[in-house]
Length: 151
Length: 268
Image (tube, rainbow over all chains, first blue to last red; front, top):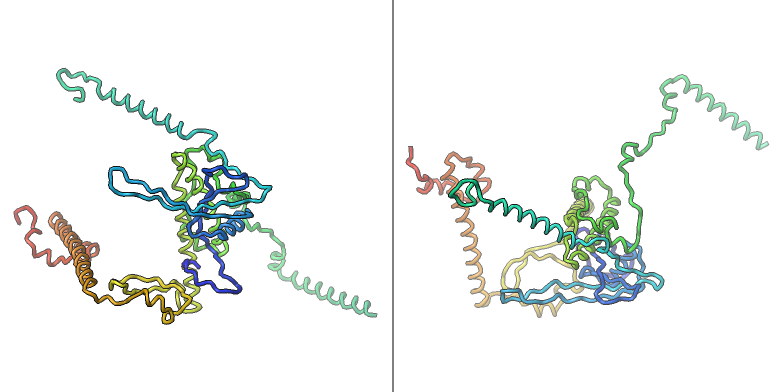
């Protein structure tokens, strides 16, 4: 169990139980428009449709009607200034269909304040500091006949 | 008649009880213990630290708390230590695993959202902490598993493994698995796996491969020797036992006979 070593499947009961599942699951913002009762997930590559269903049912108390999965190929692109290609990791995408009366909408995580703008203001403040420091650095010193940096 | 008899019986028992009570009154220690003192199982001082989050089974569990969405930093504690987890019961560990699993899923979801936006996630070290806790928990469960198996069967119950030779005659650590068909019956597997590695090409490959490995080892050994030599030059009164402990492969007696050890000064 804890060694994560699973024996071969055999018919009949009692079946093996997974006590410490190490599958992960995350909700992603769907790139294509989905129906209101469909949630898009990324899941562990080892997970099957049944695994996703059981996972949501047992751990999150969400009872999906249908689950579809597909494997999304990672992007392949040339590395700049090198004659090699790099490939991103493949991901397994799961589309979870909730019952008709339930809806799910991806929450507006960044509506309240823009972290980007915050970062920009921080950068501007840092730039102002740097400018001040440079001005102090190039200010001529009092000793005649010596360069500016000579203290 | 029966009712009367019962009454008599009851009166008898009552008498016995009163007698008992009478006996008890003779012993002052017993009386004091008969006073019931209600001790709370959770002390008030500890009660203040007991914090229970409301149970929420929903898809919104995949997201962080709404107050943390716009935060720059989210305060979090430290990971669970192994020593702490060893004190917990199996049931508690099982529950804690699922708490950690949910937390990890939440952090993964948030991380993905921030990455999509090319923004920095607040306190990304939270994920490391959760991962560390999960790792510790798993090792503790494994320890218990091993102890149980050793007690019951005399074996650790770990996945069996052994060193085997591959088609190129190189040894590797093979972790065994269960198979549907026994090895001697699996003809297809025997056809696809040839175990002869005595060919010319394989021999050449192995010779060159071993040469490379030996070179690597030798350079490592030389590097260590050189380092120790330089140390001995700089610090003539060094603790040699410590040197032996850190670099057990280095032959110090051999280094002592070298001229380089003297350093660049006139011997006194």
